[in-house]
Structures are given as structure tokens and as C-alpha cells.
Length: 550
Image 1 (cartoon, rainbow, N blue to C red):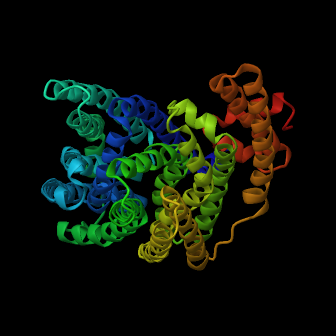
Image 2: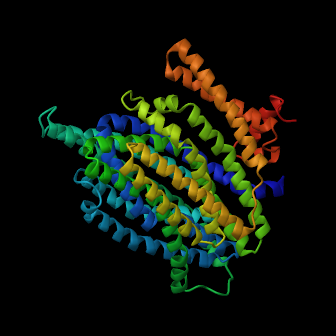
Image 3: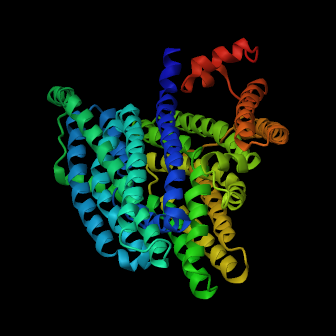
């Protein structure tokens, strides 16, 4: 099992990061509900509108830094160039300090040109977070390059905990201050409540990132003596100059940034098109547009993004792995790791998508128990379910293409997908009455196109072919049975108890058990693959006790 566990170590590291991502997103969802009750759907719409632009500027300036830096440093570590690896770290830090400061200032002073007047103060509260996140990203990328995801995982959980506490506290506190300025129940009070509450929620985002940075800085300080000893023992003859390293970082970072920015631009672009067309051409009130978009992006999209956490973690873990394999010209191993990663995320993404389709309403109610929006949110979530599979695959394939040196390919693919989905969205908004569902359809079109284009590019670049039966067919069959059983059980329990919560939880537990049993009985996963996953030994023991595996 020695070599086998080495081969699968990146899956284990991805699992650690995915577990942290899952916990972080659950924390995020748990605090979204009380925040939503405090600031209301209009306030949530203002926050989501501002957050979209914050996110796109963050992606352009800093978001891709962990992946890009982990790729460059991993290549140096694979050649045991520890001094050069640390020089990359120093150069990257200077880069984010400069770029992050400029990006924060531009976002702060340019907020009025990006969002509606009511969302401007929310965007300005978010702006300084970009500067802090850049530094955090370099530290995370440094440890990821060493194939150690524990530090990043803990920092993500800390970030979300502080985000949750501060968001709720600040949103409530800002509104209390506001209540002294306006007459209760007046129109001005209601509008101000939404804006001030959204500002408080935005403050939580910055506080979370700051705490995560302090944690990562403390971890780096503790490891500094060991890092210095390794540098002192480095006998590499060629020491890269800072100019060479800066050029190398730019050559890697810029394509990463462009790819990530275009890949995620769809959300901000869709928000802008939806808001402008619905308000200016369809003459829908701003508060109604903001409320519907808040349900779509602040509830349904947040739930659908939970299972994608594993794919994002796998993507972060596989970049240093495939970068090192390509640097050593071990292309066969790179293909094997790619196939292994795709199979692993499909084993999780396919049942997640089917589960959201079958239990959309109870899942939405568990996380957002709001009777006014439950129908809209659950219908949107059902439609978005298929995008879970598309986004999972495209997120992973983006990182694999970047890891093997095809850094420009995801940019081209994302641009093509973005152009086509934008055309679909504009036509649907202008010539149909679909409203927010037009944004849902555009999201599915975009994720599907990215998935197909990236898979074609991987096949061309690596000569890679994915095994079909155990990767896609078996999980789909097992998921179909799982979804049917979970839905029937939920409806029976709902008739007996009348409680969504009491009916949903046993149905979800039964769904997990049914899928786990079927995917093993259908030989969709081997014992070795099961052991490679986080908690794999326990899963194998359970499978053997249940006589699912010999």
C-alpha cells in the first residue's frame, strides 16, 4: 500500500481541503439565513450585486494567486530548488501588495460606475478585502505547493466562522443605528435598512479574510526556521534572479487570472444584463429585480455550489501534482492522475446533482426556512442541479490544463462559452417572460459549454481518454435509484408527520446509504479507490460489515 497511498495522496489532500470547503460552505449557508432575515431580500439583492463586482476584481487581482503560485513553486520543489522556490514566494508577495492595493482603490472609488446607487456603499465596504486576500492567497499557495492542504483548510473554516459572526452582528448593529435616524415603517427606513444591513454583511467578509491571513501568517512564522534550514542546505548552482522570477510569475499568473476572470465573469455579466434589461426595458421595479436575483444567487446558487467544493479542492490539489509530473516528463502518470481525479469527483457530483433535483424543496427549507421565497428558490435549484456536474468537471479540467502548461486554452474556452451564453441570455430576457429563469438557463448553457470544450482540450493535450462505465454510467444508475427512493420516502414521511425537517433528514440519510451501497455493488469503485478517500478505511470497514465488499 506504500506506493498506492503515494499515488493517491493528492486525492487525500483534496479530500481534506474539500471537507474544509464543505464545512465552510455549510457555515456560510447557516449564517446566510439569519442575515437574510435581518436585511431582507432587497438588502440581499444589494449585497449580491456588490459582491459580484468585488468577486470579479478579486479574481483579476488576487483570486488565482494560490493556484498560480503553487504551480510555479511546485515545479521548483520537484527539482529541489528550495532557494529559488522561496524567491518565487517573495516575488509573489511583492506582486500582490502592489496589485491588491491598486485594485482595492479602483473598486472603492469606481463603485458608482459599477452598481446601482443603493449598492455603492456595500461595494466600498468590500473593497479593502481585496488587498488582504492577495497576501492570504500567496501564503495558501505556498503551502499548497508543498502538497499540504491542512493549513489552507483550517484557515478557510476560521474565515467562515468569523465571517458568520461579524456578518450577523454588524448587519444587526448597523440597522439599530439606522433605526434612530428614520421613522419606523417609513419608506426611507425600509430602504436604509436594506442598504445598512448589506453593508454589515459585507464587513463580515473582510473580517473573515483578515482572521484567515493572521492564522496563515502565524503558521508561516512557525515553519520559518525549517524553511531557512532547507534553503541553507540547497546546493543548486543556478539561482534565479528576481527579474527572471517576476517574469516567470507574470507569464503564469496572467493566464491564470484571465482564465479565472472570464470563467467567473458570467455571474457579474448576467447580473448586470438581468438588472438593466428588466428595469430599463421591461420596467420592473428595482426592489423586485434585486429580490429575485437575491433568491437566485444568494440561495439557489449557494446551495448548488456546496458539492462543487470537492471539485474545487481537487483542482487545487492536482495543480502541483500534474505540474511536477509534466516537469519530469511523466505524461503517462499525468494522464492516470487526471482520470483518477475525474472519476472521484463524478462519484460525488452526480449523486449530489440528483439529490438536489429530488429533494430541492426540503433542502432549501432546511437552509433557508423562508415561506415567501421557498417555491422560487426550490424551482431554481431543481433547474440548476445539472450544472453541478458541468461546473465540477470544468473546474477540474481548467486546473489540469493550467497544470500541464496549456494556460491559454481555458481562456479561449471560457471566452467562447461566455459569448454564447450571453447571446442566449439577452434573447431570453428580451423576447420571453422567463425573468430570473433566463439567468438560470444561461448559467446551465455556460457551464455545459465549458465542460465540453475543456474535455476536448484535455483529450487533445494529453491524449487522455476517460473510462466511461465506472466514471459516469454506474454513478448515474446508482444516483437514479437513490433519488427515486429518497423522494418517495420524503413524501411518505411528509404525509405522516407534516414536517419538512423531520421528513427531509431521514430521506437524506437514506439517500446516502442507498447510493453508497449501490455504487459498491455495481463495482463502480474499488477498495483501493475507497481507501484513498478521506475516512476511506472506515468506509471499507463499513462496506465489509454490510457485506458489500469482501
